[in-house]
Amino acid sequence: MGVRTFFRNMFDSATRRELYEFTRGTEKFYYTSGDAEVELNDVVYEQITISRSEIKNSSDLEKDPLEITFARDSKFAQDCLRSALEENVYVKVIKFQHGQQSILWQGRVVSVKPSGASIVLKCETNYTKLGRAGARLKFQRTCCHDLYGSGCRLNKADWGVLTTIKSVTANSIELRDLNFDDNYFRLGMLQSAFGVSVGIESSAGNTVNIIRRLDSLVDQITNDADLLAYQTAEAELEQAIAVRDGLDEDDPSFVDAQALVELKQEAVNVASQKVFFVVAYPGCMKSLTACSRFNNTENHLGFAYMPEDNPATTRNA
Image 1 (cartoon, rainbow, N blue to C red):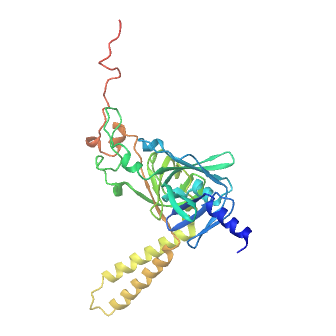
Image 2 (image 1 turned 60 degrees about the vertical axis):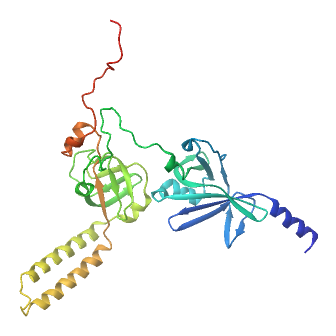
Image 3 (image 1 turned 30 degrees about the vertical axis):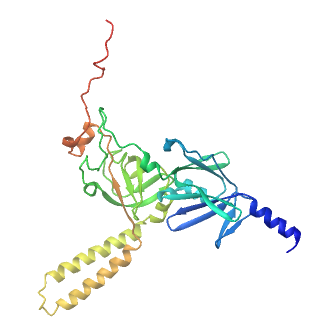
């Protein structure tokens, strides 16, 4: 080993580098803020423009978030900005120096926002889930219960509306066959075909506006032809089942009828692969009137007739 190589290796070893590991579902992303990529334990940390805020440790965990800043052209950050937060994104910040690595900070991404030429990921330590205060009931007009929660006692499944997506334009989702008043689904949620839920900001006719983009919904659009093919296959299956059920098992035609049912069931299975059902759940403004719409006023935990003025406050005449 030459002298130059020896001193270069020694310098590289002594230089502190920060490594970032992001986990989203089964995917992992590795980055470094150094001036060159880092290979460690068969993992390559890609060199990109990335920085972070100061790591703080105080008694108030919620006031100690970590902000990680990416360049706006980062594909990972853009994915987070659009819709990747439909899955939990976990992060580790690692110090690598003298051939040793140590974890400086770890937590999860809780929000994403653009900022000029950058995209900022706001992260919280995992301990915030333990440090947050528990829910407290309040003396207020609106209901204190979470909709469909244990206090509300409404069965969520009873109120879901099964439908399909006709089109997606940013946050605006066009569904099918929604015969409800405008804003019936306001403050409710839309559950995708794969179980991912997003809040609904407003609704009118067949259109709901969700609170943030969910790019995966584009892949769940069902066109009219595929939906018609599925509905036709289902109708033919039901007819075949009715014919079979009308026969006695000893009837010579029963075997053929059963074979037809199996054939029609296979046709339904094939057609269903191109149809994506989503579920829209109505929201609640948590007023007594809103609870009445659900026939649930007996579980309303609000004080609709509380006085406007504080009786403990005296006023001069």
